[in-house]
Length: 306
Image (cartoon, rainbow, N blue to C red; front, side, top):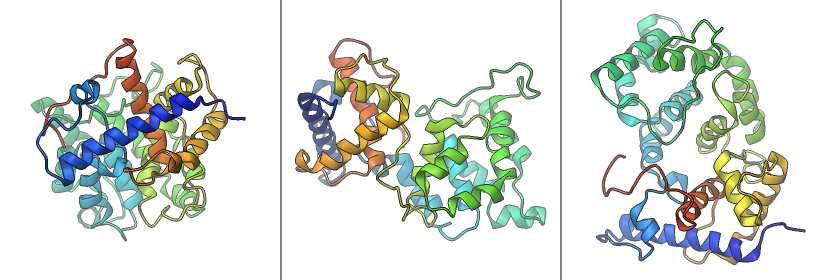
């Protein structure tokens, strides 16, 4: 028997419908604001209902997924893209041959990626005061003082350890990707230093729009439960928001929402399970404001960012 409460489920899908309506008026109809009478959605920044509609994802699709669709290193390019998640930084890597494409390979005369060069470019951006990373994801820092890289810059740690170790083990990762499973790919990336289930799943969602996992057997039956989606599910079930919901139980509830979306969505197109997971995180943010529990990190500013 479902533990989700019908009124909360209805409110969740109402939130999705209104958020989609805002996107539709703004992006397709080209209307001027305001696009909603909801003061919370007007004041604060929320991601789109469909991740594919987010500006950074649109940039990644146009500049990486499509032009490198058949490139052997596409999967690793998407690892770099989602870990950094800021187009200006990615463009600088591409322009300075710190990108795992043919230009970089020819320069070094070997099938390799120059983590040192990439780290130095990121360090230089940081020193100039330029933005290096997005604020969308919290990049995990090294907490073990015994690690040799504990005192490295965040940029060197990212390129040499978080991304570097994945690159070093690319053959085993490519083997797992051939299994055609969202779960297997997520679990594989999560074994590497500095990743974890959340960031692993973000990369795998990108891969699900490419040749690697577009036909994954568990495309809409597996999603990694992140901190935000866990809080969202707890709210929908009337549990304490900090309840330690397990991955298996959370997945069961997310699949339930996915399967029942057709009962509630009238304007918004059908969502992937990955979108349901993301919307739970955004709904939690929305309810924090509505219930007077706190505020999101960013207010909405028209035409700011990507």
